[in-house]
Image (cartoon, rainbow, N blue to C red; front, top):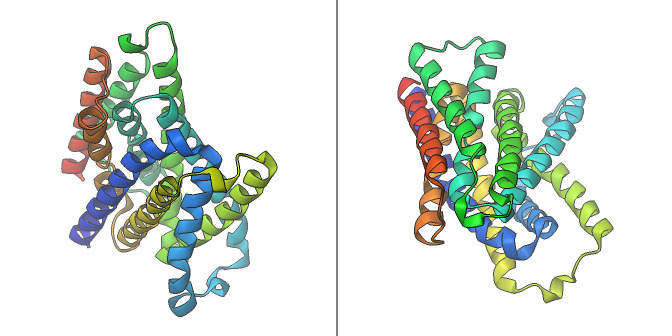
Length: 288
């Protein structure tokens, strides 16, 4: 089961990596509320046929619905922080920082589930945390006179904390109600919340939004739901710490895309910090 969980975690990382890079471009042009609406609609539309033929919402105990409501709010807060980070900072910096959520997942797995952590995992956690701190307290010289990099890092750190608790909780829920309901109900409740928010904001009419941006945002939502499916199936059949650690390598894709395709630049200390984060994640992966 460990091998299957590793492969599923790797597949989830691939899909989320592509989704993050596309979201970087879309978030800066489409707007936060619209991006959330389109990604949630796409995810629910894609997943609903499976619900009709293979799943049943009645299989969720009544006591779990408040939990799903709380998790949905947590996810939305995490996504808002993440997209705000992408709007105000380089994806090559934001995405690896958010991936440090694996530290929280491993700590929760040890404290709550009693999973064992070895010396190499401790080293990996220390390297990841140290790298995040080094990158967080560094200003990029290309933004002299502004606080955009630091602001982006604050949003990214908030997203990392939220993602850590969400990824861990999602793994637990997948074992209780199955992998599909664990992700579908969260997206469904989230869709209701973002639709209400979009109506309250009364933003620019949808007809003025380029169709290419809407399709790109829909692709982000589809990739996210597929990635979450792979992760929850892996967590259901294997160790959460192993699957989550494998999944955490996804920032490599948007990081390379940001540096190569978007020609983003980082300060030297930020580069060192990110190298430390990636090294820590690599050590965690090898030790899991």
